[in-house]
Length: 261
Ligand SMILES: CCCCCCCC(=O)SCCNC(=O)CCNC(=O)[C@H](O)C(C)(C)COP(=O)(O)OP(=O)(O)OC[C@H]1O[C@@H](n2cnc3c(N)ncnc32)[C@H](O)[C@@H]1OP(=O)(O)O
Image (cartoon, rainbow, N blue to C red):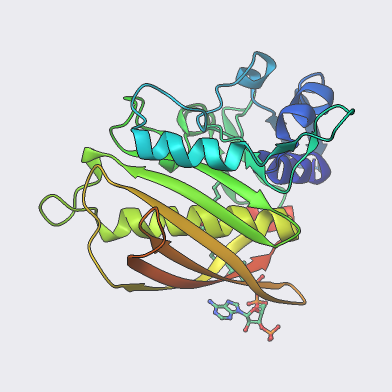
């Protein structure tokens, strides 16, 4: 179970995720673990057996600046080589889905081998990724992430929706923190596999207007044992205006950490 979950956790934010779903995860939708006292069943999302929606593709709410930047990075995901087929470029777009795990109908309440209760079937079936849970396009978080493995950089293009208001007409600091955590966390996952945020340190320098598009750029500072240190800047789309800067520490985890083991 832990191995399958590990694959899913890693694949969830990885560029290879759709392949992993099609090739490995869908056929084996149910994995069970037996202990003398409990039988825990986890099912990989049945929603994933049909094609899941990739929320990081352009939609009708994307403004010209969001689209311009998307096209700028997308054009660097593939490069033309004379006389040959297109090849992988320096950047890769990270697909983005709105859910990860779901329990089978058989598991009304999931009891862990350690004796703790994880999440009920109902909660799991309703669980949605925080940044993708408002279905009205453009209302909240519109974003797409690109990663450059060679340069160890990740970039998030973020269009701020009207439901993210904090101070009048401007984006809530928690929403900005969420996007910073998303970009740096996805970056750390690409670099180090399954991680959790241990520390996020944010300096808010200038308010971001609702409806604006900003660039969130993260870069690797260092890796030490289980620790991945990342720093991040939120700027205007031409990079000139600094809105927010942050540093983050991610710790590599084993999947049993999420299951309370
Ligand atoms: C698709 C979207 C992607 C979005 C990504 C979003 C990611 C998230 O938001 S995750 C959710 C928020 N984070 C959490 O809930 C994490 C809660 N915390 C935890 O689970 C644990 O404290 C965890 C995993 C971070 C660390 O626990 P554990 O693995 O036991 O580490 P622990 O043994 O205590 O410490 C290991 C090392 O890290 C250091 N460390 C641990 N926590 C911190 C911290 N907060 N600050 C600085 N150092 C720390 C320790 O000092 C120790 O250092 P050393 O090895 O040099 O002595």
